[in-house]
Length: 80
Image (tube, rainbow, N blue to C red):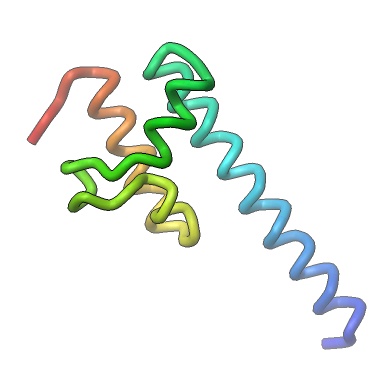
């Protein structure tokens, strides 16, 4: 792989992560009622995530899925 290909791959990974974060922000805003409330929720520890903030999960694909799943459960009132 050339340095140009590595750079392009890295840019794609960063862009994909940025898009995923924006998707989570939008999902949280829709569920919680406002972008400001969503940002506050993302920053605050929550019992449903082992007393960790949702933002700490947004570094991996599994973490994104965990936060998205929690938001879906919150939206539909499913708490297990």
